[in-house]
Length: 109
Image 1 (cartoon, rainbow, N blue to C red):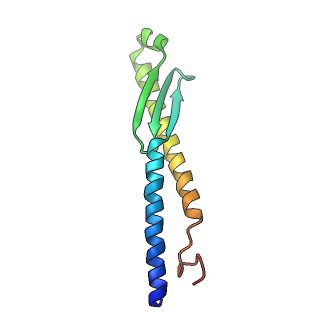
Image 2: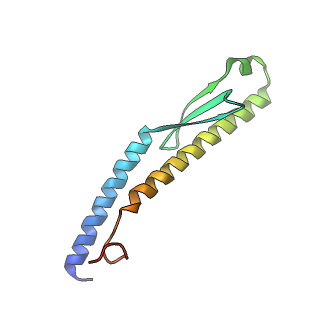
Image 3: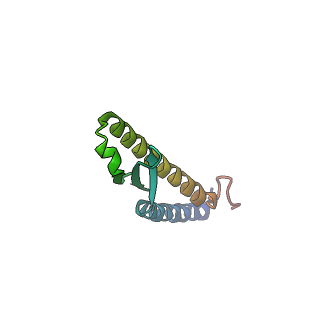
């Protein structure tokens, strides 16, 4: 690899890093939901894999079935985090599909 190719590669790497940081900020601001028990428990997660809220149907709380409430809450949280991970993976694949670095089989140099 000659010096001009190395310079171009470094510039593209910096650009890719900047785009990745932008995407991470954008994903952190996005929200996805997971639910359990037919929607009786809903959890909202961010694209930064943080749980933002949990909503529980009042009738579920009134039923006083603590074990069921705990199970449904865990299931809703896991569904929300799974949806957030899927969102991240899809966006990362979309962002990296156009990435072509010279010398790595992407763009010709």
